[in-house]
Image (cartoon, rainbow, N blue to C red; front, side):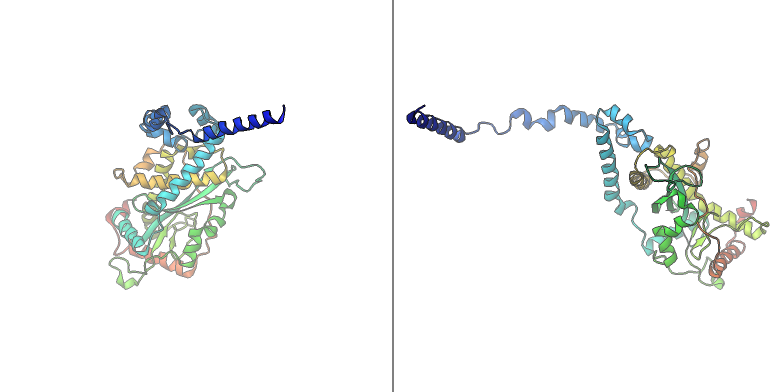
Length: 357
């Protein structure tokens, strides 16, 4: 090819490129694509799926494996894993401020008023309990997650108000640390010990000004240590006096709300009734999200009769409770507070039905 032919080819290529560059688009987005959000099969399928709310809580309500859900929806296992983690994180981030914000001093006081009205336990800011959530121990974790039950767990501590709502939760304690460390190492336990929960100031018990101001307290079972702001039953070793039995009954009745709350929660979210074969950090996210959804539903559902969930859950294996949460070496002040409550329940705060227990 001589020099003239090469120049001719270069000029021809240049004109072709220039012509292509100057060509004006007649259609930037095809008409069929413009209406994709209205007529596309994906959009129509999504609208149909939205009619079935159960599909959006399938993993939380059943605990089906990632593989089962992936096969059902014809997506990859890694896609299911990512979606579940992102969704439960979004639920917590979007709703925690409205449905599980840490109570203010005024809100703690409102909770105490409701406990007195509904459960006849004055100055009570909530019922405390803990449950073990079963999971499959991750590789190379040793005995870190193994609880006294003999299987791996994470521990959920919760404070429940008089209407079965979770007000404070602490999840993530290793199952192995059930003997003394779980409460002490939790954020709630530290705040309770350091007095940074912003509880209301001490008040006199109803009709008991002569007994002096008493602290606001939480009620718990014998697994928890007696503290100034944490009441537990009298120990049964050596026999109980009639006054101690009355105190235990009144405390047990008030503490029923946390057992019922866990019953409602585990009945709604049945994933927690099986071994969860997911990472512990995802289990923690799921626990937090479902506790939040529990509160959301409590705000929209009709009121339940006291104790009905305990009866409804009969025949189902309950979530295992925690072991001892610390040594019961109570301070003199904690012992004094419990004695004042006992005297109040047997005196000016007595109710007719407490002797029939």
